[in-house]
Length: 246
Image 1 (cartoon, rainbow, N blue to C red):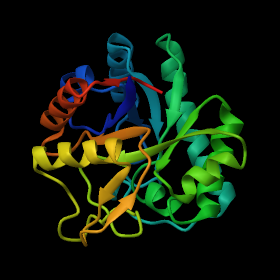
Image 2 (image 1 turned 60 degrees about the vertical axis):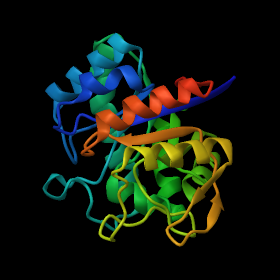
Image 3 (image 1 turned 90 degrees about the vertical axis):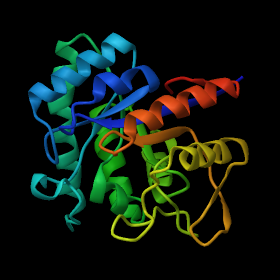
């Protein structure tokens, strides 16, 4: 039987986590730098424990004003510190609730920059390794984030997206560009099945590019997040693919 993880960005103020939990296997929880606060983190952590969903940190640049989507050019030491600060904040809450942190997935501009810049990708990996070497580094499939995880000896997960389109080089279409977001449920399901079964995704120019899928992301703040999660989950299970955390 095939297995796949479905992850979702959470704790970002939308409040739909309780609707999403039955259909996912891992959650990426905002750590207060781009969204959320300790009360929000605690609420989502408790839901994760209730639904046996893996608890992950979703660190970002310190940029609540722009939801963590503004690029910041910082030295590696500062990137390591901001990641570790956020891991510590969430980890304190997780431990108090009786849980364990499972993975780390950067957010927004930090994620996009790390996917293209090996130095940033490695700085994040070093921060994770120094904090807890058992944590899994979720990164853009096939990008330098995956290579960056290997340098300090971390486990990594190739992340693919149900609700985003791809460029011919394997990068995500920038949100500022037309057609960056997938809003049609059938199209999202088709893309997910293609990535799992064919290990390919159709880029915006029609070209099929190779891709590895360990975990599928559904953005919790997306307009159709709950519908996507439910229907993708059901379609994968019907196809004999088990939803399971890594």
